[in-house]
Image: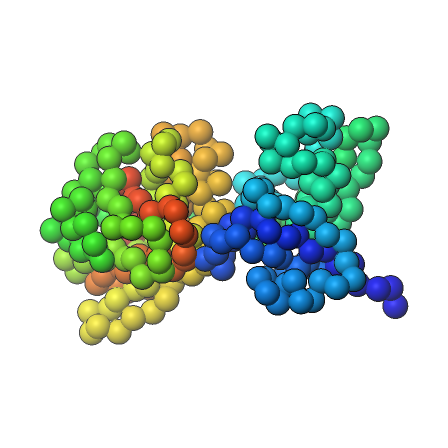
Length: 278
């Protein structure tokens, strides 16, 4: 049996929306999978390749986000990164190693360039587009964990205005949308200002509240793939779509579950689509 391939990325800024992380930390990767973060990574990285990443960003979810918008090939022209630490990597060979780990395979060398063939994206929830209609929302239907006076801006049709949290993302922020009657909420759409992309939620959970007060989690995890798909459409506001399974909701709870020492959570426009009854 061949020895496990071990890589320690030391001192980089780790941005991992799926885990709600935005911290400076060490990251230990074993055979393409994250094995430890923080002190545990440093302790387990005795006999492995090391990348010194101080001052650099580490984005473990980036390749998955590219898969999600249909990207199948990634090509790195190493000469463009040579002697250009201002682009985020001191040595293009370190960038090659990082993409190898994220893609789960070694890239193919083509002269001074390296290419990767990405696998298919994870399966998404099947949606009958013809059954969806936009649910009418009013300001009186919305409440939030903070800044209630700014909730009007998520319904004003202007992506340059927004509701936002009262500080950097801490994992307890929420918006609640109450409906006049129970609906089958099929889709949530969040629009973002061109200047506010960094204020996306580091983790997002959507929860259904039924008429009897019982609750059911409909969606939970990283918001980044939805954001990347929205940006790839080229549409104003980069509409990020979260599709939901069948439910009976008198209200929806939209919860920010991640953490960031710098970025607030902002929602520029909020739309809910319901399934028409058959």
